[in-house]
Image 1 (tube, rainbow, N blue to C red):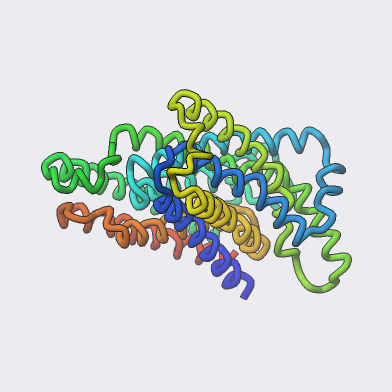
Image 2 (image 1 turned 60 degrees about the vertical axis):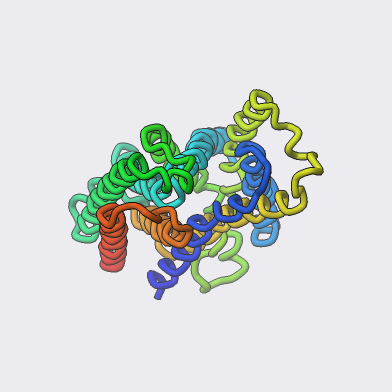
Length: 359
């Protein structure tokens, strides 16, 4: 039952992440950097401490009592992740919700699930899954097989992207509906984003002491009730400070370069709706990690949790991509190829879930 609840929580988190960009499409008359940073202020500054305060009333004391080096390392990974999050927005813009999310999050899944296990192979810690453990245990071999299959799914989706690009180049009617689609630039941005976005998982690992403290406090007050579902919420506060720093600086640079500071006060634009939809997007984005933390408390923060979370996001994002007609008018070959890629990634989720269940 713990595994089943873990998978359900990861699915809800994946649904939130795969859906968060949809409200941004309702923002009218604002430059990308303007609605991105307004959404980000909710994602990284307002909602995380609010969620921590609701679930961990003493979260500020836990942060104050944490070793400075741990806080700095957690914040540093947040900075790197922030670059990944920033380029995620650009990747989705140039590749679309469906293809952009698939490639970025697929890469993020692979790096985020493998690198921590390699680290714990070099610096072993009790209760952490090392790469050697994955290699020499049947459950670990299943997890690694799932990661390999997930990588194959990413490659297939990338192939679908090249077919789509060819179709757009030969059909001007489709170009008008996909005016931001730029595969070359988009794939370069997606690779950077996919690698650096994995740093969020590294930040969770770096700040695990804070979650452990929250867990112990809760278990002392609630004996024999298992681990604390919301223990990671205190880590998110610190990681997302790093994400806010990176994104705020870049968006302000873009506001200055593009002379778009006026977006925030231009009464000729639907300001109230723009702020509300940006806030909704930012809050929805944060919910992915709120539920990731719940799933992780049931399954552990190893390769299984991370790749399940990422794969569910990929699945939901592709469903939205189809509903938003991002593949409208392209050849059947392109559609069949992206469906094959999605199916391959879903298969990888099932294999990882099986590996985790027999652990």
